[in-house]
Image (cartoon, helix red, strand yellow):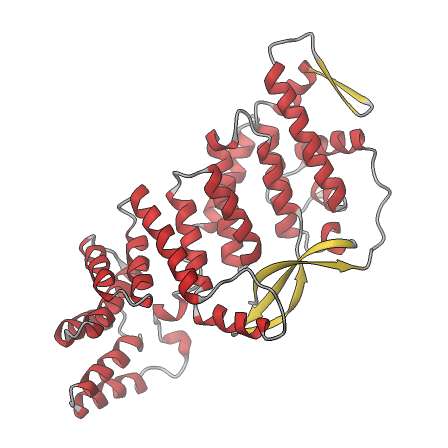
Length: 403
């Protein structure tokens, strides 16, 4: 699956558009569509809003913020009313519309559902200035794709949550679920902006910082760095820096995760890897030893053993390195990476027979890679296994909030 890497502005030819609604009618139609929409579906309400232009949607988001701000400022003063264009809303009407913040939260879900399920929404098809993302695969650029505006509109809608989205658990859940989806799908240009905002809104969320750290570690990966060089050679300006710069950013975010939640073993393991890539081997080994002491399971323990073996090797302790590589091999017997490392160690020690035995083990593994489970091959793929659960939880909670 191609990864969507970097955003830029471009101009496209206009497509045929439906007749625009008047601003007040558009606001009322949006409020009705939010109520009609079934979260998780590309239903009629989603398709209707998907056919609104980018400029209309951004004006709509501004109107929503104005109405919400007015209501939450004067919700106890029943004598007041608000005029938006040619429509007047009483406070009683606004109270029924917003149901606390529930309508805004469901509105954000409407726009994220459009982004997920309506691949040709008008914000992608229409003309004018558009956001462009660069698709990359196997370390090379694979052309450009136009980006939907609906993730941005979802964020703008949540800006209207009162007193602030910062204090709203459902807003945090929407940001987390959306970031997880975007990371899993490889939409890195969009999630870059998404996480920048999420960190400002939720500075105490270890999950937000863990996703941010993962993104920067991904940007430092050989695949992305090769694609960056390929695209830069064609004169493209990108939002990805050098591998060392991205590793340094990842380090900062992993450390923030651990300061917020010291029990996040994954952050410690990945921090150890990042420090090793930066050449800080003593620090890397210390982080990995601490992570192993926490008792990680499965692939996390495998990574910790594999990485610590490498650090011990670079620090000159071949016996310790061998022990960690052997432990990694025991945990994933069909993985080739520990055996290649053991062969390298034996070769460095002049033990040609041991080096050959380790390589023979690799050659004896099944020819079909699907039967040779080596977690290292997917280390740079998104780490979370609860993406669908987060999305379902956000949808369920939003529905519950209006019942």
